[in-house]
Structure formats: C-alpha cells, structure tokens
Figure 1 (cartoon, rainbow, N blue to C red):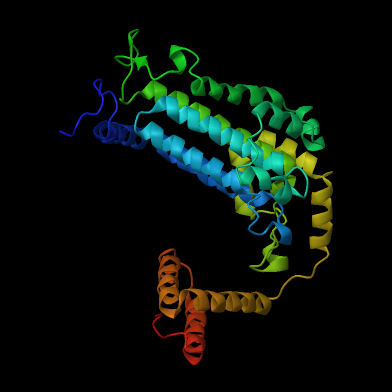
Figure 2 (cartoon, rainbow, N blue to C red):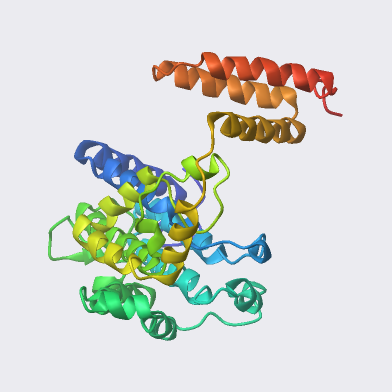
Length: 349
C-alpha cells in the first residue's frame, strides 16, 4: 500500500493500473480496440497533405499537426486509466491544434506566419477566429454547399464543455453503479463513459480529416507517383493510393466523393497533375539506382552493422509474408561490399 497524498484518495497510480486492465479487457472483447487502431492508422498520413517547399524544411509549419496527434494519443491513454473528463479535454486540444495546421498554412507562407506562435510569443488564436478564416476559403465554401461542415464544427466544439466543466455531465462525477442514478467522483472503468469518449474521438478525428482533405484535395487523388518519381516523390501533398483508400474509409465514401469533386477545380491539384502526367515513367534501373543511393546514405549515417541488422530484419519480414527476397539479398551483398571498400564496416568510436 503506497503513501496517500490526498485525504479522499479517489485517484492514484495504483487505481490507474486496475482501471487499465478493465479497459483492455473491454477493448479486446468488443473489438473497439481494433476500431480505434484502424482510425488512427487511417488518419496518420494527413500530415503529408501540406505541400512542402525548400523554405519550409525544419520550419515547424507542421508542428500543430504533431502536437494535435500527440494529444489524441494522450486522450486515449487517459481513458485507459478512467480519467474521462480530462480525456475529453485533451480531445479539445487536439481539435484546436489540428485546425491550426490549416489556419497557419492557408497561404504558401505558413512557415513564416507560424513563427511567432511557435516561439511562444503569440497567443493561440481562439477556435472561433480560426474557423472563421478556414471556412472562408473557396474550397470550404464550395464543400459547405454539399455538406454542412459548419454544423460538424459546432458539434465537436462542445468538447470545450469538459474543459470548463459545464455542470455534472461534464465533470469527474460518473453514475455509480454503472447505469445508476447516484453520481460519484472517482477513478473506475465505465463503459458508458468510454463509449461517449469513443464517439467524440471518432467525430473529432473524422472532422479533422475532412478539413485537411477539403483544404488539400490532392489527397483524394489515387495515383501511382512511383511510376514518375520512384522512391523520391516530391512533397507536393500527394499520398500513396493505399493511404488515400484509408482516408476514404475514414471520412466515408459519400463525403470523400464530394471532396473529390472539389479537387477537379482546385488550382494546386490541376497544376500538379498536369505536370506529373507530362513526366516520363522511370525505368526499373533508375528506381534501383535511387534505392542504392538512399541506402548508401543510410549506411554512412547509421554505420554498416546497425543498417545491416535493420535490413536483415526487413528481409525476414518480407520472406515471412511470402515475398521473393533474392533481389533484395543481392543488393544487400553489393552494398556491404561497397561499405567495406569505403571503410564503413569499422565500429564507431
């Protein structure tokens, strides 16, 4: 029994682990855990939708997205420990930060516009101000005519009720026992509280994904960029076809179709696709040369031994999946010889 620091002892590290076990049992038995995993993996590539330029390298223009994603993960972790009110508060933070990605990058100078805020000199703008600017963008105005995104924003914005504790419903009090009429505070697993969080989590992630695709509709284009660029696709906001399919699943096919219609007239999409389609296809030899050069850089950065261990693991995974790894192994042998010839096989100091 650990030391008690508060006379009520309603919340503790010991209770965290007890509730965590109950939560995991629920996630595994209901399939909800698999659903949450699927949502987060579908959503993750959205950070790539913001076109990158040379000026934006290491500028921090995608920092709001990463901080938002971390808050989504923290929100889930808090639910695992039965801290449902604060899990909703973290969702609210994820929502506001997620919208800031679009807000600061409304123009191509997002890497400059974000500087003062990133350095903690400017305050975070109110969500209403952020949404007012975002919703005035032509793509959002067009999308609003076919889908009421404004109402979706108002709906997910009610997460602020948990931040400001709008009465008992948005507090640390929960029905006790589950489904009862008597409310008590405390750290315990609650299926109804978890379900409410899960619904809010799904709505928040889906809303952000829709906003990103409306602002950057190139993310709805299914195109094999590898045919033109090999493994070195420019950061113009395109995604791999399987990533696009996952986002379609996340936002639902009907909404995805409406956003795809916007892409047909989006100036950035039209310009990029005209340029890409005019490029010649890369040969297999050119792609192989790209892979070799990339691995040479990795060997120089990681050292031969660390790189080799990683490659062997990857080859084994591919073999277990039934893939032919003979060409991969041949490339591995050639790169090892190159590394030895250049003295890169020696242990690092």
